[in-house]
Length: 194
Image (cartoon, rainbow, N blue to C red; front, top):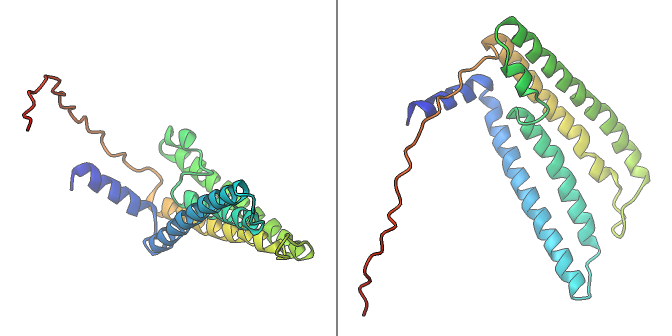
């Protein structure tokens, strides 16, 4: 393992509680399954419509998979600092100003998580009055993803706040290695044929 790989692993473990690594892995796998299912259902919908025998329930499946993939993916992206995070501002700072900006960013993310939980739950409750066609499933089945995502985003934001306050927000970036590009042999080689 190279020095850069060790620094990356050290940085990743420095940023996160190890107990949430398994949760992140499960959510990443779930995102992959949801995106694959979404792609498969869209393809099946196109094929069945082209053949003149559309399966109308595929649109419900497609929208459900799409919505859940978005909200679960948002939670995972929050854990990985890939979403809802102002990296350009905070990484340009050092010391106390950086700590303050990082804490403010996490508090804003917690506010977004609270809104997702609160208003998502209200929409979930109201969703039992509307139904999806043709299955007749309450639309609340779609809205359940919103507060679930808010809980996960809040959990990951608290994790980042605790780790940042106790261990610091500044982390060394791994050194970039300049890998040599080997020359391409463009000379014509004689063919040995049969």
